[in-house]
Image (cartoon, rainbow, N blue to C red; front, side, top):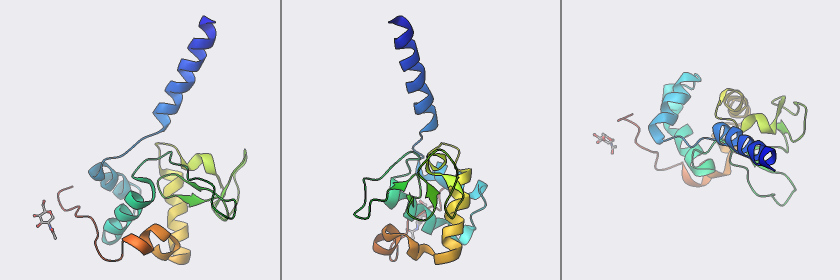
Length: 139
Ligand SMILES: *[C@@H]1O[C@H](CO)[C@@H](O)[C@H](O)[C@H]1NC(C)=O
């Protein structure tokens, strides 16, 4: 019984370490580190705030077509990540790799989506980021 409790505690701890909610300025710093162009930063911050509220392990509910969206950038398993044990789809990643506090894989995949479709690929950006963008000048 004690062993079981310890195992559960460790699993919970591992999960909490993986998950992360960035503050706005932490996010800005992290996006710079991942090489997102300065001129795009306010758009990416808006997109991420609308899509995931800056929470790395956010998983959407099931969409009408049976797909789900994963992580900071809410990337779809319909086209971009494989919802299974092996990497796959167009970003050649597992969807679970898009949920970690280390946002490298998610950033590479988001840039690939952007390069193919622009910000219009994201409904959240289309609906909420075309007029007002967040002010990140104090970050
Ligand atoms: C953005 O924030 C800075 C610092 O808080 C402020 O000086 C500036 O006026 C703001 N810009 C806009 C467009 O609101």
